[in-house]
Image (cartoon, rainbow, N blue to C red; front, side, top):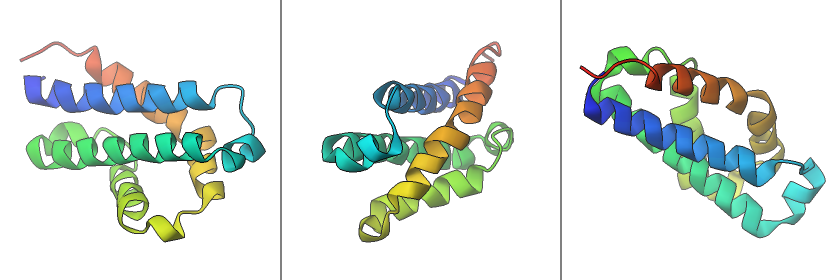
Length: 115
């Protein structure tokens, strides 16, 4: 795995881990009521989507190993550009339903040797 690819994956993994840590022990109601938490989570999702978009351009073969990469990038675009239309329920659903598998895939990819 190339160094640049590893950097993007590392950034994705770090941001995903941060979201998981920020939201540990929280409920949707607590998430929705905490503006600072929502802002932090949305920022980290922005980082995930941006790093994945760059990975997709730089190393499309590795990016293709991440399920739903196009949806993740689109989610980033909604959060960044469509901020007024961000639905907290959707964000929370992604945190609970999709984030664990993304973290797992990225962790597995990062264990591959450098080229």
